[in-house]
Amino acid sequence: MEEITGFDQKDIDENKVLAAISYLGILVLIPLLVKKDSKFVREHAKQGLALFIAEVILWLVEVIFGWIPVLGTIVRILAWIAWIAIGIVSLIGLIYALMGKFWKIPLIYDWAQSLKI
Image 1 (cartoon, one colour):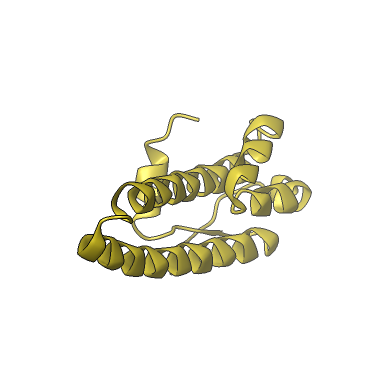
Image 2 (cartoon, rainbow, N blue to C red; image 1 turned 90 degrees about the vertical axis):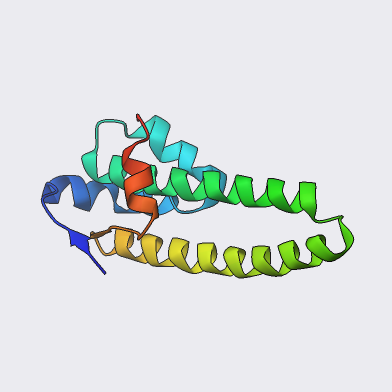
């Protein structure tokens, strides 16, 4: 797991909880709106937002294709696996934030950096 350093320690100490909230689905909007000036929160929020967007896309795929007899079963099985993966990754991100660290989530980090927040 690749970890990033270079954050201001005061910023980390003051904003760990808000950074952790970034990994709780729609609650990512709270840190995005409340602490725009915190680099530590912003980086976690970018990843949290990317994970939330992935959750919404996953849900839409389930809704659109889930009703088709054979394809729907395959989609639901793959979606179930993806939901578990997203949940685990979100939990790891939340724990890292509470520890005052930042973890580059594979596949998500690069996508998150393209978000203009």
